[in-house]
Amino acid sequence: MSLYNIFGIAGSGMSAQSVRLNTVASNLANANDVAGSEKDAYRARQPIFKAVLLNAQQGAGNGPSQAAYGVEVTGVQQSAAPIRKEYQPGNPLADKQGYVYTSNVNPVEQLANMISASRSYQSDVNMISTTQKLLLNTLQLANK
Image (cartoon, rainbow, N blue to C red):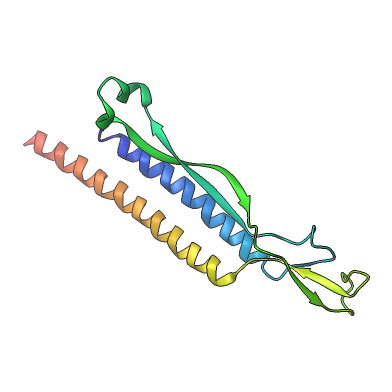
């Protein structure tokens, strides 16, 4: 693996974690939403990650140890968790039976996702910073 592939790998990780953080923010913003039907209720979303081979043609001739992997977001999946149904006959969004439907967002789960995503993002930043320092130190050795 080329030293420069590290920047691509870390960059793809930062991009993926950024999507994850935006998804968590969207879920938390809609955690208390109510709707008049189960179909219209907000469902928690989760990005789907996929490992990708970077510079596949470059690594193919040199064997599998030369291949570099990154990550990409292939889509956003809605949660299959059940929608809660609450009896609120005075709510203007209530259906004929007096029920409203709330989102299936679990705030505790979303906060755990947010912490995990932010730490992964920070880890990628540290990897880029460390690689940059190593490259600069290598260049300084060449000047001596």
